[in-house]
Length: 218
Length: 303
Ligand code: SF4
Ligand code: SF4
Ligand code: SF4
Ligand code: SF4
Ligand code: FES
Image (cartoon, each protein chain N blue to C red):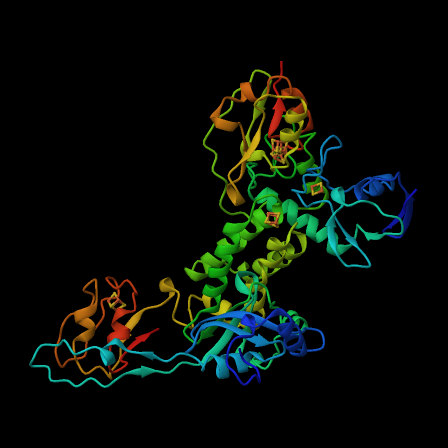
């Protein structure tokens, strides 16, 4: 069984575990937004970063195998600063209104705000949604689905819904369209959302780390 | 190739075994052999060059490239086109420029200032000054190049190449570019320099792949060596006279009234006044630089 040291605490993990799992075993709460146990690592949010001490490399912990003898830093100023920057950058292109902090922090108008992991870690890390405020992604389409709602302006492009839809055998599913700053999660060929998520809709909405995909209330 | 071989053919064309023996003997302890650069920018002799590792930047610019380019005013090389009654003789106007910096390593490389031109070109020394060998681009810059504009230029390229997978690069390079664009148009905010520098470190440290990790290099090196230029932009000035929104063209007293500028201004911002000092209507002027390149008296200044 591989043993790794994270922030001076040693922990034994099952072979094949990643550093994120090792940290969770030590009750370290890492903001792993784009990780989902049923999916291959998306390495998209980069909020789960850790530092491998002997090489000095900073890696996404969700995609790094815990190898025997590894010495890792997690809750250091350097790493927490990088994680906060990743969260702040995500919030800088996010539909939540930032000026009003009336209802918690950041101000959120989502049904799902108590489950939203972006909101949770933004709060824990003291991430300022206004720090890097700038231009916003363009979103032209609106989406209708009997079971769920999709607001692309709250999507952090984690890729979880894409993988889950694929696993569920959705014939159409979701995909990333565009590249760079303007990449978005969308239905291929401009088809309606209803057609894309015929069986996986509720599962995707449950797994979505933000309020982008959420279940409709009955 | 630049080495002691008597015949002047390139090492690249020699058989491999010859290359191995000769080329491996070149270079430094840790950076062996030679490196090919695309020498470009404000340089007299640009083109592809193959140099031994360890050669200094100054040797490349001065010995191989022949130094910084001198530009000829068009008035000096073309014939005079003023009306007959203007019997003004035009002297060939050469403008000499000074070596300011080199951008080494392509769009993800760094800017090395002229003061550090004795830096040897090897992996360690270049990394130490914030640049890299990278794709082998070597762009020579002179005093008319604005370092904020250069950073903006290179980041525009890398930002457009971001695949969008990870947040620090996808959003971070865009935010950095937005700040640089603000600075170049005189809309910078007080905290922009600190935000830019911090963000550059965050993108460098937090991105997933080499593109995001190196994209901030031009920004970080220009901030490191030319911070006063950034501060000038924040105050609404472009010291190099490059950023169009931050400059105005005006005619100084050395104007002899030759009318060349007025004849060539594409938007008619200069009234034709033979033998009198000319004036530029700054509202009409689009800062195209045409008048300045035509003026044989070097009377048109950017402020
Ligand atoms: S997605 Fe999360 S962070 Fe964004 S507005 Fe909704 S609850 Fe808030
Ligand atoms: S909709 Fe939700 S699950 Fe899908 S990519 Fe966006 S944030 Fe991730
Ligand atoms: S750092 Fe690499 S993976 Fe991340 S967005 Fe940029 S190009 Fe894509
Ligand atoms: S810079 Fe161009 S537009 Fe302005 S006065 Fe000179 S020639 Fe005319
Ligand atoms: S959870 Fe590891 S990169 Fe997002």
